Image (tube, rainbow, N blue to C red; front, side):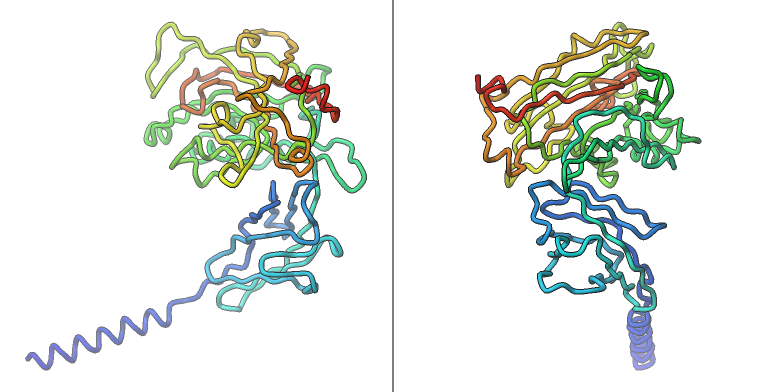
Length: 381
């Protein structure tokens, strides 16, 4: 009997081992993401098999570090290897765009992507007239006149990808951040509205979603585990910022809430600010928990008291004021070590899930007034 059980056990072990060995390999061949030392934004179109990589103007296009996020077991390589290519480093100076082939783990499937590199600066004006996509939600892009080989283009980020998890939106217009008609000069503008997140939000204790729009990126993978860390603010800036100006309309929602409970007598406020900060080995971007408190902040343009409710368009103009006793180092400025973030929110404490459902902020015609002359910057005067 014992011998019989022993044989049965051996057969079971062999069967399990065989199943493990015969487990189907991954058939996916795709690029899910790109990161790297100089990459500021990565826009992937999985249908057209294209990738747009935006890097700082200070980057060396002959040595672009790219770390590809691929499906399990998949591999990637340039279709044509250039002599200057290294480990995770590729030459886009002599060939741009470049073709990269992704091969699935089982080697049965492959996909060839066209990857184009853009050396870019932040735009100085934001009119919100152009969407790069309206499915499933609105994505805003700004494209200012370029200078030589350097373009002034970027896609703005919002919390719309996080709101998508709630399944509350039935159309693109149901999201917190949308493009609408009725701008200052009759064109388009952006509308930010604080929304209820429904049963899903209650379950994860994220009861509202403020409408927001900002320069940076939204890491949807962190939206549930640490919402404040999901917002990455900033883009390299090569000038001395002087003012953040534009036009707004704002109406607060009726009932202010905190942690899902109505707070009687408290009124919601909107927020608009610009923040310049210095990057280092430990700080490559600011997030929702550090954007106003980091010791790396060099200058801040913000004035909550200057944003009262208004039914008609009202102009705002905030000076960039030096912070933390810091000035701007011209050498660091040229190397792209400073980053600038511009942030708009329909609820000032929306990142803490505090605010009023229905609070609505409209924004249009935003301008970053700047100079290349260090003597015109307040801290240097």
